Image (cartoon, rainbow, N blue to C red; front, side, top):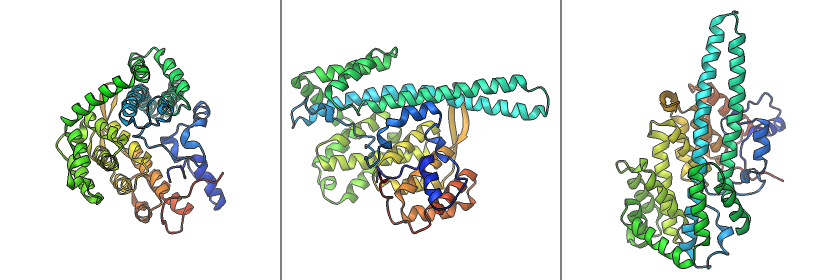
Length: 393
């Protein structure tokens, strides 16, 4: 499923051509900027590899580190994995800061466009020059965002321990204090003796047991109500936790829950996944900060777990407004980008409920959503009975 159809512009157009359809729009510009440099830079992305499974966004790939720790040293691997996650977070925060400037430029371009229209045949040369300059800068920013996002993905895609060390050394030389600190800490963890890693793991365990998230994971490990084979109890526990006041907006609690997905106990992993899904559902559907909300939609869209399907449908069905930060000013906006992302991912899931939802979108208030849903139904007119098959070689 996860390595199957990722509906970029090429996928839409190839399927459409086989079905005799034309003029298929590129809706996925919201997900993948289509500048030449971005295309060249993204050519080696893991999720573009045919037949490969898209990695779980919550579980760093630790294969380069297996030689570093003993086969049973789950705690040591978890500590190192958290160190690498910190590096990824620092890189993604850098990308986020650039993306804020990109959004601000979008507003500037809208303002310039309105001014050009208002002049109605007057002298618009200066405005058009400013417009061209802003568009050029926006393309540069898109490429920079792609670069930092790719750097974040590369942290867990190194093929060997040697390659990982070299990559961390490269990151430690960047003129970015937060990234330098995270990279050097990860280097320290790689070189730390097993005794030191055990101490760090024990310290983290003691700290986790005193937090709500830690107590939830401990219950999954030992308590009967969450330890039974019936997953309904664990889902109920996940929902109750996410609905506790303030919990879904607590970044530390979310990070702790996501770290639990690396646990060796399958019951702990299960409730960690379910709880993370519920927290991201809350953020995606109820938080007014649309940038935080969209980040959670991205996490949900990247997950290969059936529990996300009804949540993606809920996101798609409910347009809403909120705010985004533009130059330090909160500006009202809507969740159209999140809805489009949910729509595209639901095409991949290809469930009967998703198809039913698409058919009900013909009167949606967003014409792009209407058009995208209509094209999806044209491309796949037969009953939707499950995830799309992987791409053929």
